[in-house]
Amino acid sequence: MSLTVNRRTLLATAGAAGSVLATGSASAGQSDPVVTSTNGPVRGTRANGICRFLGIRYGANTALTRFRPPTRPTPWTETRDAIEYGAASPQGGREPNQSEDCLFLNVWTPGLEENAGRPVMVYFHGGAYAAGSGSSPLYDGTRLCERGDVVVVTVNHRLNAFGYLYLQRLLGPEFAASGNAGQLDLVLALEWVSDNAARFGGDPGRVMVFGQSGGGAKIASLMATPVADGLFHSAATMSGQQVTASGPANATARSRAYLAALGLDDTCTHQILDLPSERLVEALSAADPVLPYGRVYFGPVRDDVVLPRHPFYPDVAPQSRHIPMIIGNTRDETRAFLRGPEYENLDWEDLPELLIPNMRVDIRPETVIAHYRELYPERSAEDVFYAATTAARSWRGAVIEAQERAKADTPTWVYQLDFGTPHAPHTFDIPLVFDNTAVEGALPGNGDTARNMAALMSEAFIALARHGTPQHAALPHWDRYTLPNRETMMFDWPPRMENDPRGAERELFASVPYVQPGT
Image (cartoon, rainbow, N blue to C red; front, side):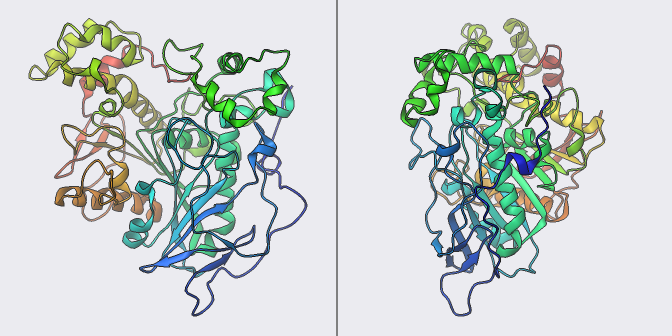
């Protein structure tokens, strides 16, 4: 049966109460800024001219709607402090302060004048749909506000099984959207931005979404999600692609594997609604039944309800073809996550068996090694390992997305980050785009060249948010990505444009089908 769902239906308001309407400006002489959002008044802090509001609730407690679309919170009238980050989605790992009550966002703004009309930059964090939050110091929006006179927003939402466990075929129509519940959280957050941007000095007609890794993949998926249409006006993805979503059959197989880890089968699936969240987190270590490696994958599902098509297959979703977009990757993505004793001191004999599981495409590793040794005779076995694994998986999805957008004559700009030692790994561009190289843990460090590179990259993202193009005076002319030229900005020192960088590597892996991780 066909099920048509509009945005307002999926993001049903909790209760019948309407929005609270009030001015968005702080009271004169008041040290702590207060804004009355559409859900209720919030009090932030001000430092060095930047107002900061942390942990603003944009959705109700998702424990009450587990595996279902989010709802708006019950409006409040008493001013709530927005001075600490809100809870992150339940997950494994070290993320502090986890709870199913996790629909919070953070806002940084240079001022609260309702007519200021500043571009709004909304960041979706990485973590492969499974982990992370919008609360990392690397995502602090202060420097972008100071540099670009923009409003910055970061978002927490449901992750892993809480946000992407597909239960429609196991629990029925009430859970038809369960495989994309985390995406619907992001839609609700973007609706909050649309409703409240002006109250925080922003322009609801100039909302840019940007994200790294899983955050970029979330954006790619939203670009094919009808209920997200019109909620953002430009986009930038950093090492994060979603060419295809998980199909309903594979998603159901993954759900069954996860339920089995919880000790549940089809006869008692409904019990998952009442299990403690800690139990649900423990079962995330279940093996994936579809892919021959790793834990069970959770991500967007082509469910014909929320997501009616794959994001970039067989082409670009028509709803997003007009949206200006940056697509970027780092030179050696896999240096960030393929680490450990087995990857140290590699020699050529080790290489074939290590490449097979880590390229994520079915190609003879000896052919790949011979190709790379001919292209780059000076490179070591370690260099070839990271180059080939990056080209076969992380970079491959970005190339496909850029190609499809070029075929549709969309406004697209592509970059490759080469700056770094020995070459830029995954996540290297985050502190550069946020201009946060001075933050502890920033991989590029805070030397002069790193700060200059941060200025180049952050200004490009600000320019896209403000003007719909990343061009600015300090960059060479950044041509749009077209075929066959494949124009690419090489962020190195100095920056330069190249046509079809690593073209021979691209052609090698184009000879075999691409398999989106998760599909």
